[in-house]
Image (tube, rainbow, N blue to C red):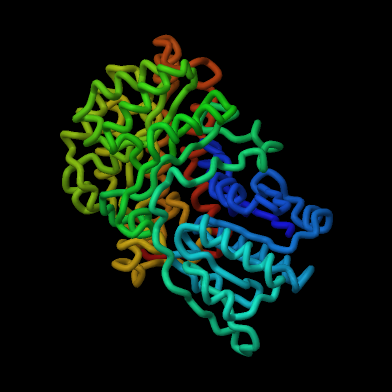
Length: 474
């Protein structure tokens, strides 16, 4: 069977935030590794390659599968709709976080099935079923696949059936290595900040915390699972790019495992540059762990500081303290590890709130700031709490850079203040970073260009105008 995996393109980027990262399509590479045995699998990354029709006609797939983030929903729908228009007999399937948490968005005539939850085993069983029955499988066969939603045949209204929930995989070590060769022709174009080419490795799933703006803990049924250190290092060794980011929500949360990975990397003489996501409570409690990771190649950490006050952290159900945040800042600055520090801007911010946040970031020396707008993403507690207040349901604006909730300031003023968080007041900071050796000239120029683009408030208004959003009240 021929299987085409498609990474949808994002909506137009009026703000330029995506210039900071273009990660490999890891979810599809994982699915591809499961589907490949006995099948012809191809991957199309439409963020870089828009030749869907040419690829479809050349490859002539039997199945087309897509995954998508919330902002990519409409493009994913368009892909599946086009496929069914070109060849109605092709089996179309969608999966991922959004499809799992908001499946109604894909209960459409041009979709044959939705993978709900973890996709590897479910997708593998679906492929096996189609191989055995053909592209129009009997209902009884589809009904046996846990974690699958599908349309009953012969139903005029396209009635959807949701099978029994798929249990989480008992061991992440059972996952095959991602089939990175499927995206090899794009590999040189994937990047994170200043590292290109760049690879992503996911070594755990789930999160023990309950941030109200995040859906990860819900998707993974409030559980955390970890690959063994040996399995992690095996994937590191098999990954070609020198620069690697661990994309776990908190890579260091299993502290003994983090130490074991260091030990194995040293034993095997692996030389790579690492980035990771980690929480400040873990960092503040284990400075020696961070120092050890720095010594084997850690250079950047993405941290969700989220707020400049304890009140702000508590409102997000963050489960951390300002003291932990600031201790982590001191540890990382002392080690020379770059902080990509994330802060959340509440749409109800006043001018004074904006000023306080900007001052806080500057005083704490967060070199790479990431400011996002508090966004009730579908599937989160925040969405359920605030969906009646939304000023738009257009998913293209759910990018955490546009306010989909009412703003206290007039919207133009809100975006002016938001953009000012990114805009360098002068070039002194850039020159200081270069002279201190913390940034090369090339990296400093890229950082300046990104900050200047994000610092133009009109770019945010363009995004609203592009989807026809007009909010006149504050």
